[in-house]
Amino acid sequence: MTRIVVTGGSGKLGRAVVTHLLDHGYDVVNLDRAPSTHPDARAQFVRIDLSDYGQVLEAFTSVDDRYSEVDAVVHLAAIPAPGLLTNSATFANNVPSTYNVFAAAQAAGIDNVVWASSETVLGLPFGETPPPTFPVDEGYPVRPQSTYSLGKAVEEEMARHFTRWNPDLKLIGLRFSNVMDEADYAAFPAFESDPPSRAWNAWGYIDARDGAQAVRLALESTITGFEAFIIAAADTVMSTPSAELAARYFASVPFTRPVEGVETLLGIDKARRMLWYAPQHSWRDHVATPEA
Image (cartoon, rainbow, N blue to C red; front, side, top):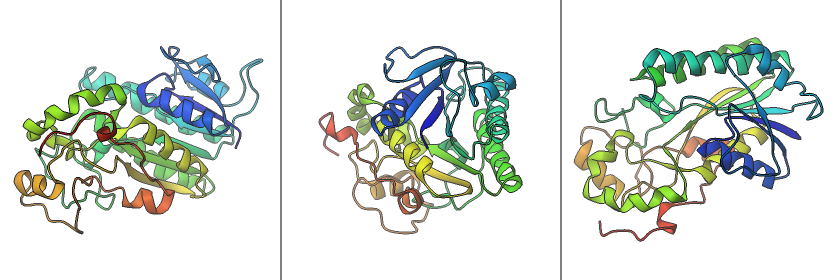
């Protein structure tokens, strides 16, 4: 694996992924509608409309004097959250684009694809429908509660069938929690005075740099077929112990194992076990933590 194309490499998570892959020796091409506002000069940029299958197929094979072969695909480009566009516009952008990525990768003979699914398929917001257990895991069927999440659920179902058609294909969906970078952490101490404001995803988050680590580990994994992994930080956005928060706001949700201190309630056990994912970054390294 030498050259990796990253769709959406200009976004918050995409920028971290591009830099992380470059730092680990990969040749990276950023495929996006617009160049990054903070580009990494080591990465090539190619403007693309992912809704056009022909453009996607070309980008996965060759682009004039830029490159002539692609080894793997990271698909991050999407309307990134519910409510940014109308429901139909969100679905019409995200799902067909992901189909084009999967189908073009298959046509180009690329059998290593990692893409951004979402924690929302777990049933967010949890305040309306609590999860079945804590820590939340990948063991229960997806239950989208928004059109955005429905699109992610459809993408995961598509992945199942693409890998059924081609047993050599790897399609790994990373169910990223709320992506943060260092500039976002200044707001975190205020959450302590308003825990319900973050109960919608069980107080979870993911540092963009750890999200990038998960992408690389998924690319380098020898897994074949479709797999989905929850990708979150090792801790919550809170200073109050996680078990105390769960008892207060999700009293009816049982625990399948003990949770220590401020450990995340979004279970990353599967990612740790199968991808060797080990989050390295916490908001606590950047701002003072308040009294719980």
